[in-house]
Length: 154
Image (cartoon, rainbow, N blue to C red; front, side, top):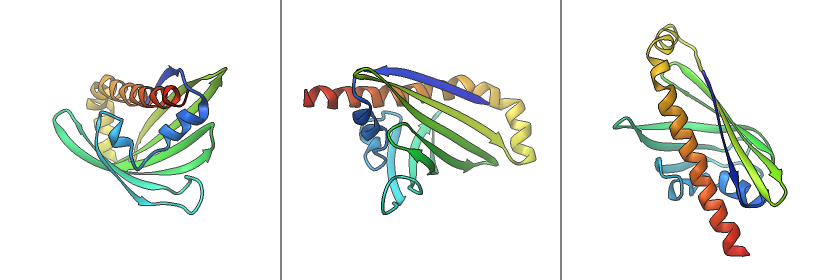
């Protein structure tokens, strides 16, 4: 399963990067998050940063641990997570378009256990729309925060 969502943001790429990498405070501006907690922070950059985020999906609260595996500021960063027999990969990319930015998130889930593979082929497809909607809301919330920041400075 792979999902890609994108949005155009009326803010410079460095402003969008600052919001998209604000792991400590993202629950303050991403409406789908209940809370976040940074567990490990590298001395420099974001590669190796590990955090937990808690969100409610389909009426059930879930906390997942995620970590940044690669980054090229301010172009993109990659995130991994593992849960319920699956490995999840995300890439957050920022493309400069004049004074604006296109923010794209690509999310991929790969089942690792027999049960996860079985469920992925049956029930997993039902969650595709819900997951796409959640990811789109996340980047739309980053958009609102970054545009607010950009206009506050201007």
